[in-house]
Image 1 (cartoon, helix red, strand yellow):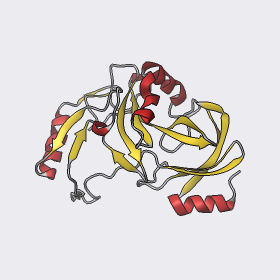
Image 2 (cartoon, one colour):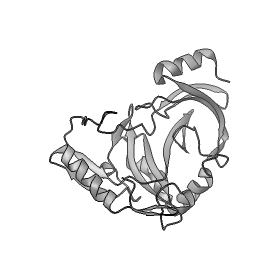
Image 3 (tube, helix red, strand yellow):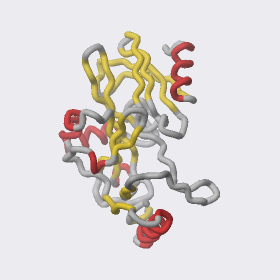
Amino acid sequence: MISNKQRAKAESLLGEVTPFSEADPFNPTNFVEGCIGRVSDHRYGALYITSVNGSPTEQLIHCTPKLKYPFDKAGRYIFPSAQRIEAFTKLDGSNVFMFRYSVGDAKFISYKTRLRPFLADNSRFGSFFSMWKEMLVKYPKITRLFGDNPSIDGFSFELFGSYNKHLIIYSTPLDTNLLFGIKGKGEVVSPSLIISDIPSAPKEGEITRDYVYAYEETQARLESKLEETEDGFRGDEG
């Protein structure tokens, strides 16, 4: 049970939060309590764990952030300053984030969707636990990402395919791509900087010229390939 003091601490770190108390389905002997962040910025979906198996702990885990569009609500472009900009195809599926938490000296690996602490099969959005178990069989080296990239604290994936249908129609039943890594307080690490044997989202290229022109050119090219059918769209989401 989350105390008022613990919730207040979580809110001071993450803003608006939702408490949770659940068994970890990937480590079923662990019962985890805490809060999950709901503010739409780098804290989106972050976990503040307050206890594991009844033992008090304080673990803040930043997860897949809410990434900003390069324009405001009025359509005015606002690009941040950058040394390099890489563009990747946006896959149309569900985000799965791989993270670690501690119990004493032991570290446990688990997985979550954006606003849930763990994957589950009782979600109205899909059987994410079962689908992700298929991906762990297909790509057994997923858990090696931590060992191969010790400076990265977590990894963001897209789970997509005809079994997890959204707007884009995929010919493959189910697959996943590595999107990026997360370290520190929500810093995004490009997949090009991650040591990995896991497929990553297709790279569209690097933007080295006028940002607005490059963005609109790429958007128009992808939209020109979209084919609308009775069941959805064929092509790339963005």
